[in-house]
Amino acid sequence: MTNTDDRITAALDEDDKAFLASLDSERGLFQQIGDSWQGPMGGWAKLIFGFTFIMGMLFLFVIWQVAHTSNPIVHTLWAISGIALLIVIGFAKQWMFERMNMITILRELKRLQVQVAMLSEKLD
Image 1 (cartoon, rainbow, N blue to C red):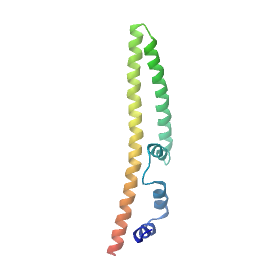
Image 2 (cartoon, helix red, strand yellow):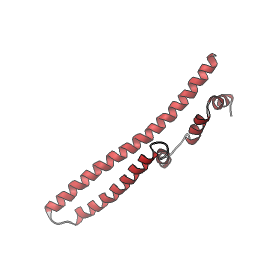
Image 3 (cartoon, rainbow, N blue to C red):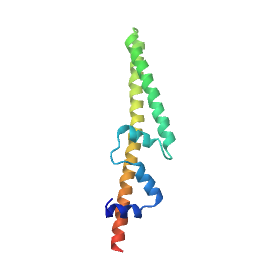
Image 4 (cartoon, rainbow, N blue to C red):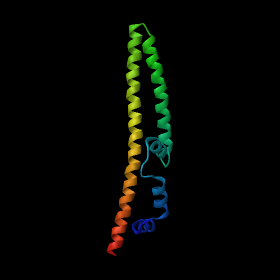
């Protein structure tokens, strides 16, 4: 470690160290999804993930029904329900990705906090 890394480590309190240790520099999609399942909103993230999965399975069933119905009215109703399911799935995924982005922003804010602490230490 360099002298700067040692000073950053010394400036952090235990919560900051644990938070930064949990966030690697290169995190993949699945790691970010797993990170979003922790913390105070973790239960909601798990619920939305499960909800999205169930809606996806329901969408596959709707597509099956659209492909195998012969009555035009029933066929249209299944197709409309498929479009509605796509919209609901899109909103749920949007929430999940916003949560993942929020965690990334928190990570960057912690880094900025460390840099400000180092600059204030230099001035003192």
